[in-house]
Length: 237
Image 1 (cartoon, rainbow, N blue to C red):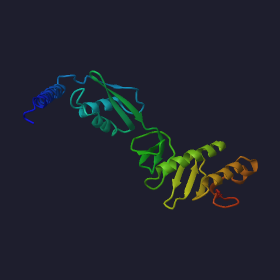
Image 2: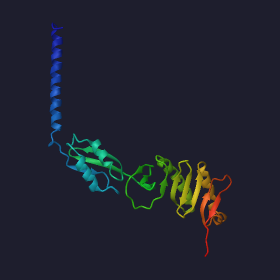
Image 3: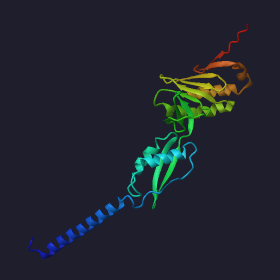
Image 4: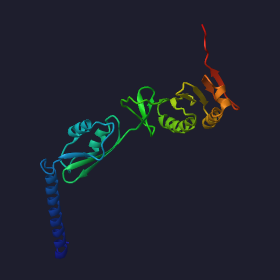
């Protein structure tokens, strides 16, 4: 092999080329890591947030952003921003030469969750403060997506009666109960909930049906051919 001049020249050229590339890579790596090269100068929000304070966003960016335009860890910045209340999802992207652009999605509160948190429209539980008047969801851990899905369906049906859900509960035995904003409680059971509620709504949309449930505080819909009504008891002194 050592007598093959052409082969030796090829090896030498390859080594020289590799050395040049390594030197260029080293120089480029050193250059982009210089603190003064392409420093970050601005952070832009693609849309004005409704719930999240811009000051809180700026504070997180100031505390959690290290390096320059090329070296900043945008995944770390994203994860830090997603810890803020009301922030559901954040996309962080670079905008040459000195900016970061934040696309921020906020939670849209749908209900309260077990008296300690909130539920968004995707059925996800999150922690935040809210003064909104919201229905109350009750259920075992991990059931918020299922409760949200059922709530959407039930809300359409009771809206035909000009009513809304005040509380929607799923028991540990998977039985459903709905309390309306007029105070009436509907016991839906563990199966055929949609059909049971649909029958009740159909009856309530008739004059005779409304008279039968006038003053009712509790309606048990778990009967095959009807439902049981518990009326308000008026005590006269």
